[in-house]
Amino acid sequence: MSAPRRAAVDYSVVIPTVGRPCLADCLASLGGSAGPEPREIVIVDDRPQPEPLREDLPLHVLGPLRGRATVVQTGGRGPAGARNIGWQLVTAPWVAFLDDDVRVGARWREALTRDLGEADPTVAGVQGVLDVPLPTGRRPTDWERNTAGLARAQWATADMAYRTEALKAVGGFDERFPRAFREDADLALRVLDDGWRIRRGNRLTTHPVRPAGRWASLRTQRGNADDALMLRLHGPAWWRRAAAPRGRIRRHAAVTAAGLTALVSAAAGRRWAAVLAGAGWLLGTAEFARARIAPGPRTREEVTTMLVTSALIPPLAVYHRLAGALRHRAAVPWEAGPGGGHGGGEHAGDRIGGGTA
Figure 1 (cartoon, rainbow, N blue to C red):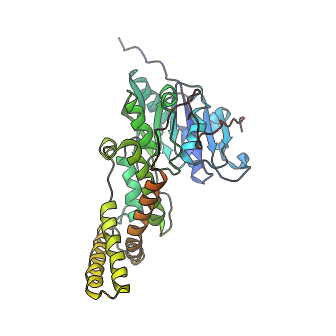
Figure 2 (figure 1 turned 90 degrees about the horizontal axis):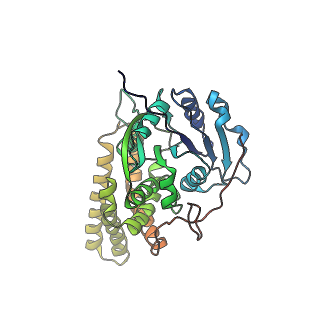
Figure 3 (figure 1 turned 90 degrees about the vertical axis):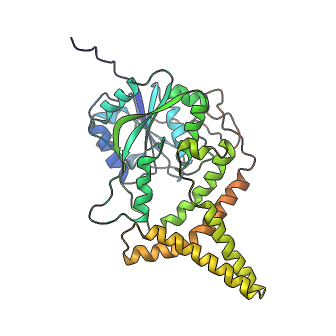
C-alpha cells in the first residue's frame, strides 16, 4: 500500500525588480516550472521614477500563471522595502522570495511545495539551493568568484521562503539596509531570535553571474556600512551565527593608515617615517592585489583592474565602514507594528496596492 500523498502547501511568490532584462528569464522559468501553482505572484516594481510603466514588464512569459500576477509600484524603496510591500499583500501562509536575476528549476514549484510541506510548525523559513554557473575553459574573474559565494551563503533571498506569520512577528525586512546586502541575514537572525528555526530545502535555483563593469568592486564597498549596522544590531557574534566571511576590513584599515601616515610624514618633512609607512602601504596593497589576481584569468584587463582597485578599495572600505558606524550609532532593533510591518519612524512606509497588470 502506498503512503498517503501530502496535501500541496499554499504559497505566494514575491519578486522585487528594477526592470532588468533578466526578469523575463526569471518569470519564464517560474511559469514553465512543474508543480502546484502559487496563489499569487506579486511583482514589485522598485524603479525610482515617479510613475514606472507596468506595461513594459514581461508578464506574458508567465504563460498560464499570467492571471495570478499583480504588479505594485514603490517609487524606489530598495530591496528590503520592496519585499516588505510584496509580502504584506499576499494572502498565502508561505511567501517565496525570488530575485529577478534567477532562474528556477524545471520542477521548482513541485520541490518548493515539498520543502514547505516537510517543514514542522517550528520552522519559519526554508532556503533554496543556489547554483552559480561559472565559465568553463578559463579561471573565473574576481566578480564571478564573488557572485559564486552566493551558493554558500545562508538565508539568501535569491530563493528564500518564509511563513507570513513569522514575517509579521518580526516586522519583515529592516529597510535601513538600502542594498541587496545583509538585509537577508538580518531578517533571518531576528526570526531565529524570535524562537523559530530555518532549514535548507532541496529545490534548485540557478543564479547566473550578471554583467558588471570593471569597477564593480568599488561600488560593492558600500556594503561595509551595512556591516556596521549589523554589528550595532546583532553584536560581534553575528558573523559566526550567519557563517559570513569577515572580510579584510582590519587589513584595509592598516593599509589605509599606512598610506595616510606616509602622506602626512612626507608633508611634514619626516622622510624616513614616510618611507617606512609607504613601504607598509605598498606591501599591503601588493598582497591584496596578488590574492585577487592569482585565482583569476590573469588577462591584461583583469590584472590592470585588480591593481587599480586593490589600491582604491582599502580607503573606500574604511570610509564606508566609519560612515555606517556614525550613521547607525544609535540604531535600535527593527520591530513589528500593529499590522505586521514596521511600527513607525522615518523608515516606516505605507502599503502600496496594485491591480492585476
